[in-house]
Length: 162
Image (cartoon, rainbow, N blue to C red; front, top):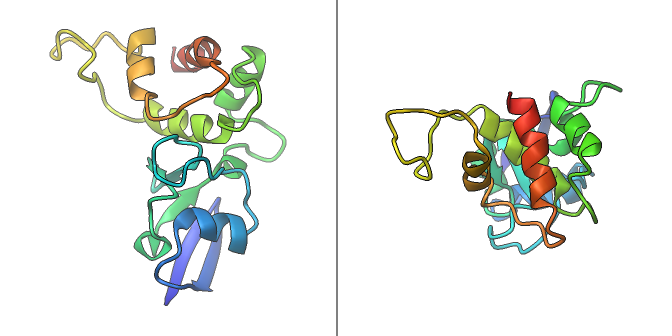
């Protein structure tokens, strides 16, 4: 099948097997290896990208389902040499150790900041307390870090959110 995608602001028209995942298309066909293949089952979040501004596990998304969409990977967050504010905050707060989950964490955090709140972790859903550390943890719960850098990840996201 022929599909057209806008990836990190660059248009691509590609002939693809209808069974290929968006993650495999990004990594193998477009050479964008920032998004990682962690579990390949949608459980770890290492492959998180933004599809039309919403976060998604690229390992579960078929490339053909993204036809006509705008895809943003971790490679597309920075503007030239200027880091995205979350990237800068992750560096400043040492919000990674091995770094394998970091691309997914960053894309998920960017998408999360654009989502309305509150989530079910907030006791009173009519009163939005903003992005508290508990709210950030709940919203980022689909992104796992085997090194346990969660406290610094939450701090970095909280700084950018405020």
